[in-house]
Length: 99
Image 1 (spheres, one colour):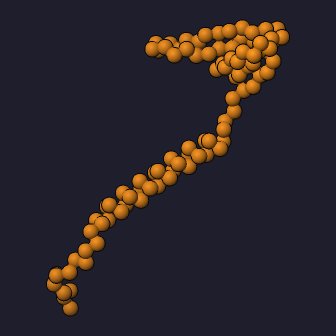
Image 2 (cartoon, helix red, strand yellow):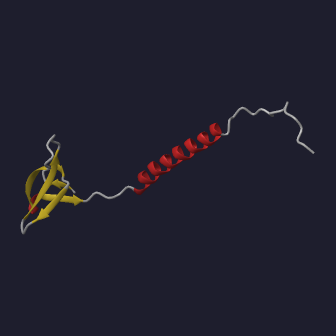
Image 3 (cartoon, helix red, strand yellow):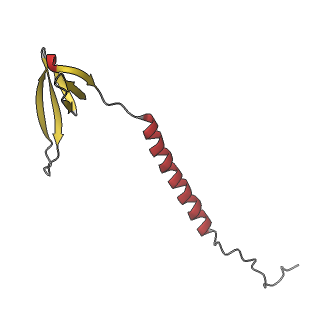
């Protein structure tokens, strides 16, 4: 969640809770502990000028997924080419089949 105050301050929170006259935003702190630690900030609703939530950017997600799929396909193609020997010899010089 992202809010902009009437003073022009921008805050980004991982999540927020709402009360009658305020909201409390929570942001995860990066710590080396195994316990998650969150910082919190209360903001009166009368000070909030704009509020928005994060949304999935499907174009960027599609591009990243498409590039990942292309890399996998190219790798599989190259692996199949190298497992076929790639020597291109005719194998001549052997005995003719019995017959």
